[in-house]
Image (cartoon, rainbow, N blue to C red; front, side):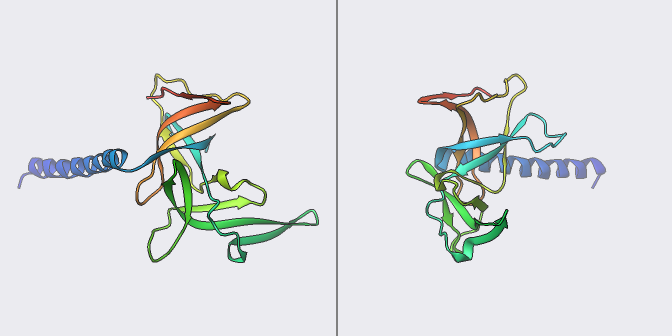
Length: 180
């Protein structure tokens, strides 16, 4: 077998791997539920990040147990405080992104969620950030006071939610951003 033929075989295998990922994501966008959820934008200080926005997605965690098993107590300035942590999976229910307690017999945990005492349960931040690609021609969003960033996410059966679109909400106005 010539080196040229070997090179073409390696190229074909690499193309098949890349195309399989693209097909999987396209299938998930078509077949899996999509919901709008609040998002926070942050800069992880990665110099080679490119045109990506790092997003912290928020989900409804009101169904997560707040018992001793999930509570961590700590002291600050002679005051005892608590925070909570869970392993959870994400799901789309009633048009919202929700956190479901992880059941080791039925699901793979996709998120490690932590929250402080007093944070509303419907605005829990997912543990890992996700990145959203922005085209070179698009203007990056700069939020003003009173505005919130929202993300339309695909919720696959396994794995973290994947953002599809972004929007800015201000009061009752909801404007989808053209970032592609």
